[in-house]
Length: 374
Ligand code: V47
Image (tube, rainbow, N blue to C red):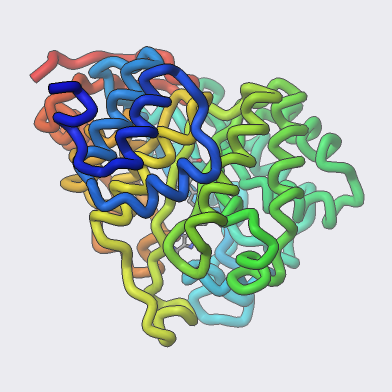
C-alpha cells in the first residue's frame, strides 16, 4: 500500500501530496482544495511531512519575551478590534515613556526576557518624536534586549505624523534601536475584506510595501493573517500567496503567525460571529505551512489557540509556540480565555509532552538554551 493511500482518503489530497513530495509549489487552487478538505489528519500529516522535507526537525521554538502596549488610543476603529479606545474613554491608556520603561526594567529584574514585543493603537495625540524617544529609552535601559516594535500600520501612521516616507521613518527608528517589526496589521489583504472589517486602515499593498522597505533596509520582520471573519477561502490563500511572493523577493520574513478572529466585545459579536473551532485552527496552521514553502517558521500562537491545541498544531506544521508574553491584551480584550502569560517551564512542558524538543530561541531563531528531549 502506498504512503498516500495509507494516510488519506481524499482524492485531491493524494494529488497535492504528490506535488509536495516532488517539491512542487502549490497554487491557488491547491490552497482552496486544502481548506475545503475534510481529512484533517491527512492534512496535518502532509503539513508535517512538508515541514520535515524542507529541513525541519523535532526542535520547537519559544522565546522568553515581554509584551508592552504603549497606548490603547486608536483613530482607526477596526471592527474586529476590542483593544482600541478613544482618548475620552475612562479606561483609555497611554504610557509616559519613563513609566513604561521603568515597568519593563522592573519586570526584567525577575524575568530574563530577551525580547520586547510592543505594539499599540494609532493615537492622534502622540507625535513621531514619542516613537523615537520610547525606542531610544528602551534601548538605553536594556541594551541587550531585542526590540521588536510597531506594526507596519503604525509605521504608516508615523509617516502621516511626520511627513516622512516609510523608509525615512524606519531609518530613524533603526538609528535609535529598532531591531525587527512584528507581523500585526496585515489582517487580510483583500480590498473587499478590508472595506468591511477595517475601512479606516491603509490598503494591504501599503502593509506589503512597508515590509518590503524594511527588508531592503536589512530589517527582518514577521507576518500574520487574521482569519475566520468575512473572508473567503480564496481571499485567505491570496493573502498567503502575496506573502510568499514578497518572501521570494526579499527573504525578510522570519515567521508567519495565523491569528484566529476573537469576536467578543467587537461589533461582530453582536452579529452572532463565533470563535473558531480546533478544526479551523489546525487546518489554517497546516495550510499555512503547505502554502508558505519559503517561510521557515510557523507559529502556533498559544495565546489565541490554547496550549492543548498548540500541542496538536506542532504535528500540523507549526514549529514555534511564541513566548512567555507576560501581558497580552489584544486577544484578551476580545475574549481569549487563555492565561496572559506562561513561564519558561510551562512552555518546555507543553512542547516536551507533545513529543518535541523545546528550544529557547532569540528573535533571530538562534538557540539560547536547549532542554532534554522527552
Ligand atoms: O494586528 C486584533 C490581531 C494583531 C483581534 O509578530 C485580533 O511575532 C484576533 O500581530 N481577534 C496583533 N486577532 C497580534 C500580532 C502578533 C501576535 C503574535 C506574534 C506576532 C509576531 C504578532 O492581532 C493585530 C490584529 O491583526 N487582532 N484584534 C481579535 N479580535
